[in-house]
Image (cartoon, rainbow, N blue to C red):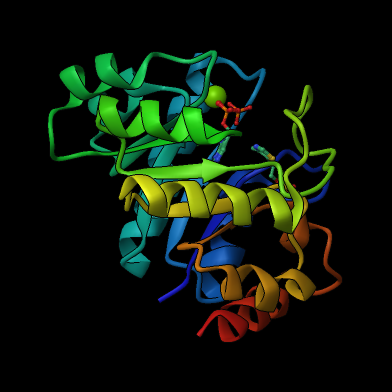
Length: 206
Ligand SMILES: Cc1ncc(COP(=O)(O)OP(=O)(O)O)c(N)n1
Ligand SMILES: Cc1ncsc1CCOP(=O)(O)O
Ligand SMILES: [Mg+2]
């Protein structure tokens, strides 16, 4: 099993809910709502809409950054980075019934997230991407290899999802590394036929 998480991103032509629907229609069953610089009202309304879509498709629905909103609307989980609420605190607020993902760029980050109670790691960036500003150092395949070796040496088994500039061409090599999955946005949203692109990516991960 190689998981695929679709992450929403603002585009002029595809709304956030439509992008989630595209991912779901293409067979993705893990959606992260990531909305930056929007009002509280827009975020909450969109989150409830995307949550409903995810429920219709039996997909997991997580929200970027916002532990409070996840708790309020009963989403499946949250993704947290270095500038967000610490994972330990989020776990205290959410308890064990919610998924908590943590961002990592190094093995030390992963070790800390495991100690703090994360469920999975979004590890990257794999390569340069314009979807996120202020990127951490790029890992490439060698970066993941080195992290996975260190995890094995210390007996850490948390799922690692690669992220950052991933396209369909990368899937065979990322899969071969022994990662748990990928998270991607632009690879779908910039495709000529986004639903078909997701279908292709899902097929490549099977
Ligand atoms: C799966 C996944 N991995 C990493 C990130 C990045 O989270 P963060 O570092 O908090 O940056 P922002 O997404 O908040 O800009 C993610 N969202 N999802
Ligand atoms: C949120 C995030 N964190 C690291 S890279 C990234 C963006 C992933 O999107 P894309 O697949 O378009 O590079
Ligand atoms: Mg964040």
